[in-house]
Length: 343
Image 1: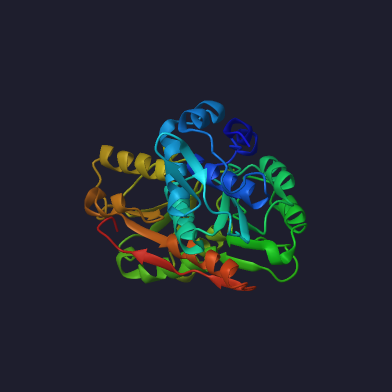
Image 2: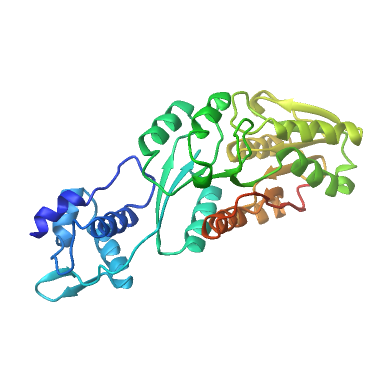
């Protein structure tokens, strides 16, 4: 088969968040598996791939380098890239449905990819917390994969999501990050206990919190964050006699000494710190600050921002472990307090 004819079997999905070089690798391997590309076939050149698939030369070269590393193709100077090995089988084809892209989701994706290994094909789709998009993506992909890994966070539509998720065979389903009520049967899950996590984290910080009188959590209306976070927050405040308040919009909030703010979103954290500084208040003395989700930068800002955070790498590795070892059960990941000067 001519190399230009092979291009019809190499497809890049513009809706997928999977890096395009990995899509290229997956497409070629799949075409080999189903017999559309055979041993000895001359593959399209880097220029042909770049033009036909509308990808950069660097992307095409990176994909071919990965295939060479896998021992599937080899280059012959002056002739091009040839398939030299078709004796392989990838039993795992995994669809990841993430609610959004972020630094922390990248940690999950990278740790999952590393743990699952090179023998699995992984497609990543992002539905931006939108149930309608989630439903469309899942309906379009429902019969294509051996496993579906789903992070079920929605701005609205949680109650409908369980119905479509319940159409996935239990042995193919892994729920990641958040348990969703109404999913029936025995299935795998790697999750956070949002109510218990924030309660325990605040309890660990009880000594530095004792110099403040009011705890406020910035929880915007329409947020995709689980309401269970508020349950744990209120329970802690009631247990230890703190005055609680849920802040919908930090821009409208009056900040006074003796308050602690818990920020779930990075944008709110930046705005909060700017307001504290502009009012000549001192972070960690007049006003306490706690941020969700650990990042390296938070170790440095204002001599350290206190964080409460799950183990994102563990979310990825434990999910891969469920797939590789056919584990059906629920794994709760740990949650940590990183106490720093901001409290």
